[in-house]
Amino acid sequence: MSSDATVKSHYYQDKTARLADLLGASKVSLRDDGIDVDGRFYPIVNDVIILLDPAQYPASLKNRLGVGLKGDKTEVFAPDIQDHYSKFWKEWPGLHSRYDEEFEGYFDLVDLSSLRGASVCDLGCGMGRWSYMLAQRAQIKELVLVDFSDALFTARKLFADDQRVIFLMADLLRLPLRKGSVDFAMSLGVLHHLPVDCLKVVRSLKSLAPRLLVYLYYALDNKPFYYRLLLNLYTPLRRLTCRIGSESFRVAFSWAAVILFYLPFIALGYLLKPIGLSQFVPLFDEHHWAGLGGMRHSAYDRFFTRIEQRVSREQIMSLRDTFDRVTVAPGQAYWHFLCESK
Image (cartoon, rainbow, N blue to C red):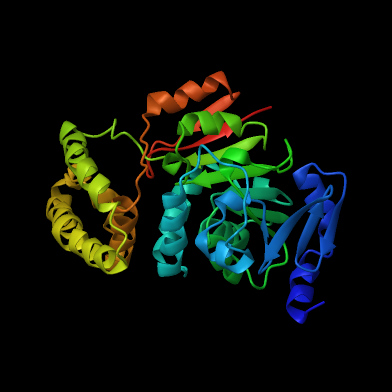
């Protein structure tokens, strides 16, 4: 057994029973380079358990584990979205002070003391920023981080000193977790990028946990008409830019977007703020506090992601046909909401 494999196996040495429970398996056993789940092998790379079908592996894993790997043909899968976020979180791997305000905005619907001793699952965790911040603020027992991109390896570095975390590279549309296996689940800014109806996916997650916190892009349904007009102008441009894979172009374009779109609107917002009209200026509420780096972060994400679903508050409230209670936050970020089941 190589020393590298020993380290990888050791991280889950005391977690095999919990893994079996999470995955609804009779037995989980460690191997040098992965785990056996009821006789089926899954590789482990840098403490990340690879539960994806080989056909869904990101390029880095195909190169590392074998280019010739074959798996089931996956009809509903977006490899371009996977590649985008693999690169995205390499570009922005660290924590920033601006995330504090975002965190407070997302979690205003959750009493953090209610998560004491809880198992929390972050679906589409990216580099793990919200889970990391939650772990600093709430006395949770366990974090289960799930993502289908290389961002999980960035998350592993972020949680280098935390033994409470389980890292699962998996497809949210083929989620391998047992029903009721966690106490609280969240998916913030993820489901609207999937190639299926995002509200249908929310409904499918009901059985995972009694509480589910979600953020989806909003349809600007609480904004003046010109917001939607600007969206109609932006969308065709995004559909063009997302096809361009050149990283130098993406860096240059995202900075151009900051200079030509973000900064002028934010400057206008500050001019109108003394007379109480800044709330009617596009981009101001969401980004005036973010700094140049935060604006470029937003621009890069918005202009280079092919799939972008948007939902209205009314559509979110239709989830009451599935959940016992759906609470939509009245403020930023639109729309984030809490689904609860008895």
